[in-house]
Image (tube, rainbow, N blue to C red):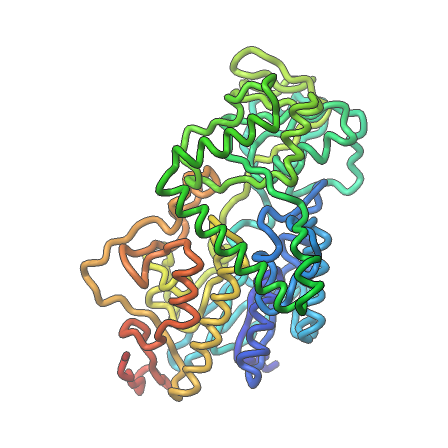
Amino acid sequence: MKNETVDVVVIGAGLSGIGAAVHLSKRCPGKSYRILEGRDAIGGTWDLFRYPGIRSDSDMFTLGYNFKPWTSENNLADGPSILNYIKEAADEYNVTDNIHFGAGVKAVAWDSDTSRWSIQYTDKASGKNQTIVANFIISCTGYYNYDKGHEPEFKGSEDFKGQIIHPQKWPEDLDYSGKRVTVIGSGATAVTLVPEMSAKASHVTMLQRSPTYMAAVPAKDNKVKLLNKYLSEKWAYRILRTQKVGFQSMFYNVSRVFPKQIRNVLLTDIRNKVGEGVDMKHFKPSYNPWDERLCAVKSGDLFRKVKSGEVDIVTDHIDCFTETGIRLKSGEELPSDIIVTATGLNLQFFSGIDISVDGEKFDHTQKMNYKGVMLEDLPNIGFTFGYTNSSWTLKADLTSEYLCRVINDLDKRKSQKAMPVNRDDNITSDSFLSFQSGYVQRAVSEFPQMGSKMPWRLYQSYPVDLALLRYGRLHDGIMQYSTSLSREKSTLEEAV
């Protein structure tokens, strides 16, 4: 049986995968493509996670696509609304028919004789291993393990008589009405779960080892209605998107230059919201703002719940689980009927997919990223990674636009291969991500490296990437183009 052959394979049908397919259809209309999705549904993260209150922690005017206006006033949207938005985009641009669901990609192999990738996957329906061949791959697999979240081993967990739940595997039939709930963690998931569960639970405790920076973010943006009254949805969206991007960039940069001042602003606002009766030690991190991602608190709901006493925050370390709850290092016990381990994600590069080039395993951990989009010495494959300090989709859109430029340039140059090559011996390498968050530090060694200067360095800056990816030169002396009908006859063209 002949293998299916397309011009481009997109791996993943989540937010960025559907976006990449739309960009392909708009910017490379003559190219055939196939999306391989390991699960049975569109949406990725927004279909997988089902815990109470699941929502974005970025505003939807920047988490939304640059080609599809977010028309709702909801600033921080709930998971079902985001999933519906992704499905609408897929339907509007006829993407759905190009998705192969239940296609779990296991390995990709580049062959220089043919300048083609062979993508090996297991078809869930038949259980058979299949292969699809493509000239180019766009990876939209995200950066974490979809099968299993991070679950530390807690001494005595087998003794606990209640339920222990990780948000990534939330039971559909869980009834927590009238129950005492302890949520372990203080990241974006916990900040969402705690106030949401407190509406039904008898009491909710957020247990954290150390505090996280938090900021109240309005649930709605009233400017949407005003702008839509006088402008088209497209222009209203563009204005709001530009305003949000500008504010995010300014706030991040000011935070890095004046960390003490921004810390004081954040903590003063929290103090005003939780009242004098709450110990502020629970909100004072030991690090500077944006050393880890700042958590968005929807309309300050968590702060209101803490002030009212419906929610407690405890800062301590766990000694062990007991039959009835959690014993802390301080000796305090937290009685619990349900324990939610919102302890984070397991990061995973390229969804754990094996990469080989001409029969040899490609070690991505020893290579530098190029413009945050491709990898050194790896041809015709792009990787989508969002920002740590802003919305994921801002970078995903720019990544798709840039890769479409490369694909079209290959045709223009009558080439088959585009590959970044480093010839600068003065460049040093560093970690791919500089975040101090535990989930990053646990896995950063499994990711590619970044270089000490452009275009090998990540700046986590939308304005920089906008200039580099949308308007920057394709022929920068680093990206090499070649035509290689066979390895022996491969002719290297001038890299200008």
